[in-house]
Amino acid sequence: MREGKILKKDKNCSKEKHKELTSLAAKIKAKALENQRKLKSPNESTSEDSVKHDEKENVKDGQAQDGQKDEENTLESFNDLKLVPELIEACKNLKFDKPTPIQASAIPPALEGRDIIGLAQTGSGKTAAFAIPILNKLWEDQLPYYACVLAPTRELAQQTKETFDSLGALMGVRTTCIVGGMNMMDQARELMRKPHIIIATPGRLMDHLENTKGFSLRKLKFLVMDEADRLLDMEFGPVLDKILKVIPTQGRTTYLFSATMTSKIDKLQRASLTDPVKCAVSNKYQTVDTLVQTLMVVPSGLKNTYLVYLLNENIGKTVIVFTRTKANAERLSALCNLLEFSACALHGDLNQNQRTGALDLFKAGRRSILVATDVAARGLDIPSVDMVVNYDIPVDSKSYIHRVGRTARAGRSGKSISLVSQYDLELILRIEEVLGKKLPKESADKGIVLSLRNSVDKANGEVIMELNRRNKERTARGGNRRTRMNAKANMDKEEF
Ligand SMILES: Nc1ncnc2c1ncn2[C@@H]1O[C@H](COP(=O)(O)OP(=O)(O)OP(=O)(O)O)[C@@H](O)[C@H]1O
Image (cartoon, rainbow, N blue to C red; front, side, top):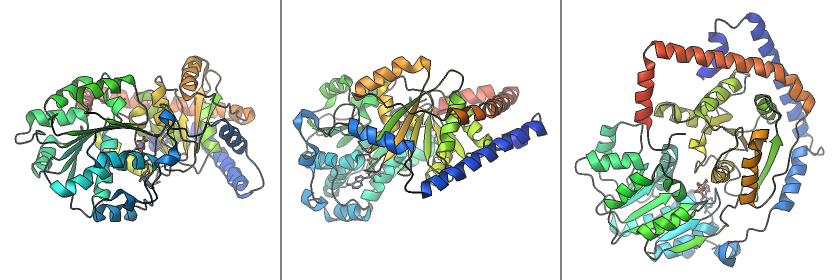
């Protein structure tokens, strides 16, 4: 990874500095070995175990909205849903033994042709909950431009396409992903192949609706808004309204899905849903009970050191670190690499190839740390993620729910830690309020933190110098203009 080479590339980095940093890396590795030894010794209980215990006691029963219990939403098999055999077979191939509660709740009314508002926790199988009824109906009709799924980010759109491809594998379904940052002409050619299902980010879809001859959604049968509350945010509002104006309202079925709902959805419900069924198998802001959530209070100026401490304590785990800004994501990814943790960055200032490349490396396990902005907060399904670290506390409480939901998916366990500085107290109180519980505090080993501090600060200084040097170089090459143009091409109304 290019950030990892900072040390080698930087001519100003003296041998001495290099030595210090290498000795830090050696310390970190020694600590990792110690951690691994601890893991192998089953009798030793870790502080994490006790946090887990406390947390479990805090978690309320998974009471569904309107008094509806999760158990009522269980079906023993996909056969009970009377789906076409090709879909049942595909579910088997995907090792989906039985419908998840949201699938059991949403698929029957969806098969009856109803509009659906689906609310269920992160990682609970919402994608298949809307994909299965669409594919089942498509089997009867097999028409081009049959369904359109809108997603707020390119990565989520691509992932949703993959789910449709796997579930529709035995049905000859044609799908296409239409997102920003990719070549318009290639996408126009894809659209001319008349796919059955289009999975798109709103901005680029609108571009094609306005500019690609022969493409229209006038005969659309299904519209899905995944992460519906996000799509209704200010940024997406105007483009969404435009899309809604050029697709039919008569004869169109609409599904809205999310793990978090807002009153804004009710607005959209008024605008484009017909007598929808509300399938809610969780409360408004409910996280899964297999997720252990804690916070760590961080003294001012020590956030980087605490992050390195945490990564060091969790070596061998797959971690997503969330930041509020693209610059922080880039800097921390470089810092991690300089300290010989393997990391990559994902944010809206990267071009699409870099974004896809970073995600692929992380998914394939070739990088154990993904440092990302909220572009990775929603929808991404990477089962191997063990831990989420909130380096910056999200300003929006809903964002917190989605970020921590990148781990503990589909019944697995997972952990999240939020680094809380004195400036974040108000934000964390608001988050605790929507969660309906206090987040237990976890403490760091102060001795280790202090021993790391100088080296981490020095490494951070190196990284900042290198990033500044690169920025200057880019400016000198006239890259500023290019960066601005690139950023514009990247615009999907989803920049973080
Ligand atoms: N019936 C099922 N049985 C087992 N696994 C399932 C089933 N349905 C879906 N899954 C798996 O569960 C995981 C999470 O599903 P999905 O990504 O659809 O969650 P989600 O509810 O949309 O989460 P988010 O709110 O974060 O977007 C996926 O890996 C998916 O393959």
